[in-house]
Image 1 (cartoon, one colour):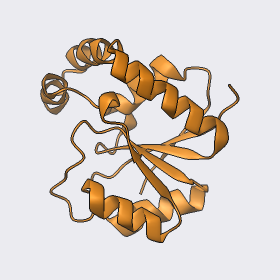
Image 2 (image 1 turned 90 degrees about the vertical axis):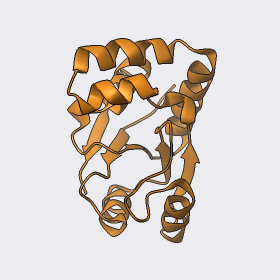
Image 3 (image 1 turned 180 degrees about the vertical axis):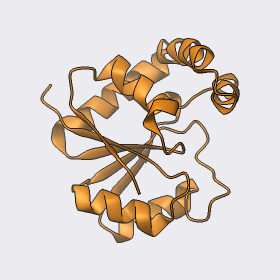
Image 4 (image 1 turned 30 degrees about the vertical axis):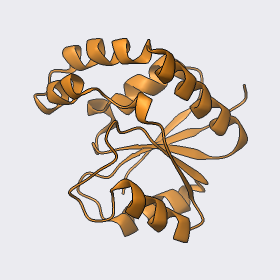
Length: 146
């Protein structure tokens, strides 16, 4: 597989316009939403609204739910317990549906510029970094900030 770079972005403390602007500037053509639950209290970031906002900018949207963090992992992340998050998320990535969606992620990245989206602004505190380290370790990663 020839891919890359794979962009990442978190929308914490950002507006939809800021996120779309950062993605557009980077040349992203598809957002891969890796939240287990694609709902948000932040206006414009729930699945349907986000897909519509991205679509207006010519960016496709795809939700890869199985690559999200299970509830227990989200709790560990909120507590700042990265070792627990890493352990829990490693188990998630062993599931057949997660492996299938990881293959989709890599396939999309080999054909067009993609960004992996989640909530956390800091990629070091987000499972998206664990995800890409596990499934795309040899692909260049570019962390975008809105």
